[in-house]
Length: 429
Image 1 (cartoon, rainbow, N blue to C red):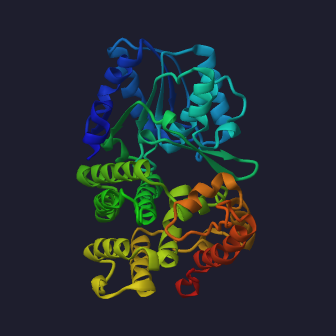
Image 2: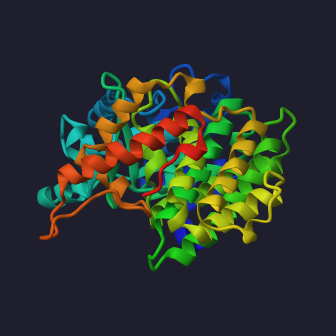
C-alpha cells in the first residue's frame, strides 16, 4: 500500500538510510541539515553521521548542520530554523529526527519561503497554499528523514507547532507542506529510548483508530478499515517485543511499518478527540501518551456510531490476548466498554499509565482543554468525529453557543472519565 501511494519518492524499510544522498541529489547540490534535538541523547548520532556520509558521497554539499526541534516543535525552534534557511539559501532542507523536528522544519520552510514573521498566520486548513498562490511562490525542496516510529510526519500534510508560553499546540493542515521526498530506515528505531518507542507507536495506533472512527459514512471508509487493520495489528502484536532490550529487527521494523500506516491514514481522513485533548497537555504529557490514554474512553463515547470499527479493534486486541470475550456477540455501549478495557490492558502490559490523573492532570487542565476546544481554529477535529458536537442554525451557520454547550457538557464528562478512569461515567450523546 505504501509503495503504491508514495511511489519512488519514499524510501522505507531496513537499510535504506544510505539512499538519502540519492534523494537529496535530485533536489540540488547543497543542503541545510536540521538534525536531532538538544538533549536527544547519543543514540541518534550514528544516524546523523550516516546521513552526512551519504550526502558527501553523492556530491551534495552540506552548508550547515543545525539542531532540530525540542519535543512538540516549539515556535522558537521554527523561527530559528527558518532564519538559517533564509540566511543560507540551500537547494534543499533535510530534517533528520522524529515528528517534532520534521514538523518544525515543515513550518520553517513556509516561514522562510513566504518571508513571514508569524507561524500563527498558517494555523488551520489551506492557508499556506492560499498564500503561495497569492504571491506566486513555491516551497523549496524538503526532505524528511524519519528516525522514530511515531507521527508519520515525514509522509503527511500536518505540522503541529507549540506555543510554550500558553502550553498550547496548534496545527497547520496543508497539502503544500507534505514532504516531496522522504526516507525511513526502520532499523533506526531499534536503539531509541523506551519512551520514544512506546509513545511513538501508540501515536501510530491513535492515527489509525481516530481516522477510521471519523470515516463512518464516508466513501473512503473501507480503505481506512484496511489501513487500520494492518497498522494496529502490526503495532499491538510487536510493541511489547520491540520494547525489550534484545528486540529483534522484525519487531522494530513492524513498528515502523505500522506507524507509516498511521501516516497513510491521516492523509485520507483526520484525527479527532484524542489528538484534540493532547494539544492542551503538552506541559504534562507527551503527545502519543496522551492520545493512547484517551482513546479507550473516547471509543466508549463514540460506541453507538462506530460498531464495525469496534468489532475490528476488538478482534485485533482479542487475537493478541487482551480481550477474552467474543466481541462479535456484543453491540452498542457494552461493546465499546469491552474494547476499551482490552486496550487498557494492553497499556498496562507495556507499563503505561491508564488515566490522566496518574500523570498529574487536574480539573484546571480539563478547563484548559475545554477552552482550547472552543477555538474555531481547532474545530476541524470536532468535524472529523463520528459524533458531531457542532450545532448548526437553520440557515446552516454554526450555532456557537449551542456548540460550546455541547463541548462543556459532553467533552467535560468525557475528560473527567479519562482523568479518573471511570468508563461507566461516560455520557453518550
